[in-house]
Length: 425
Image (cartoon, rainbow, N blue to C red; front, side):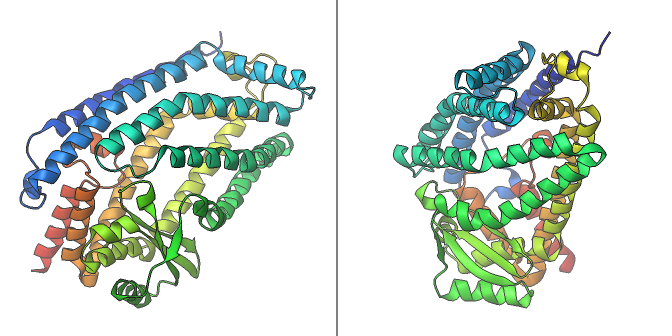
């Protein structure tokens, strides 16, 4: 008797859905609390708190519906054999088009085209409601319906241009990899990640947003002086027009070796009236660089990728595994990867939890780094401003945040900064 892989996978998916729904209910209850956490009393205005509370409750209610529909569709697709049915229909389409259905690359691309169409159809109502109802209701959405669909078309075109070569290469590598398959797959994905990190900000991101140099002035001077004092190889300093789509704000940096760039959202500059608050946020980001957090994260991702490919090589020829999911007589590379990803879901949840723990630790360290540079008060003010303007949740359930959050809640970050101040005093 073979092991019931399909039933085990679907069963665990449902169990995880129930567990995460329980956490969501705890967080929903936290959103309903009528008062601010004590550390935020007098820091966050009551008006902002009420707006944040309403926004969080709206998003939470929407999340319940979205997750329910998602688990029904995902578990149904697996349990009722929709995946192999879809694969067979992709082959039928190739035959109808006069192409060779025995060519695994063509078969896979046809399958992915169908999946992309299905995903667009099922995701579109949720994306439209999230953007033009929830985000608009709370004053965040700035994009028009035309811009929304324009971005969607651009994303589809990019997927059509970039996807086929990548998928084809992976299929060839698996077919020819032999005993060193895991190394070849990892090497390919490593090279691909380097290429994409290089090309994305230069060729892809500008297709969706406009990047302009930060104008000369006090803010630019302060950021350049800070970067220089830390020997951060800043080459370019940009402002991105995030306000064309949303009033949410952020800042980030990217680049390799001695070619680093910093990007500020125009909304961040508009919302932080004091330049020192913006500089403090950048000091936090530079702390991640100075403390090698970016490098550690990159190494962790690459290690996990290699281990995943190693696990995949162990099960890719398992006839019982493929047959359990409805694939009889065929073992397509892409399907093998999909099935493998589903079979290691328990490990993925544990790994994600561990990565969140590490990420939160990094955030505290970066905050302390900015504080040691003399930006404690400015960073606290900047964090509060970001929390207010983004209407982020003020009350957080400890179980929910421990499981989901890659960044500590605002209360914990402010308390940590206050503790370091007290130690110095």
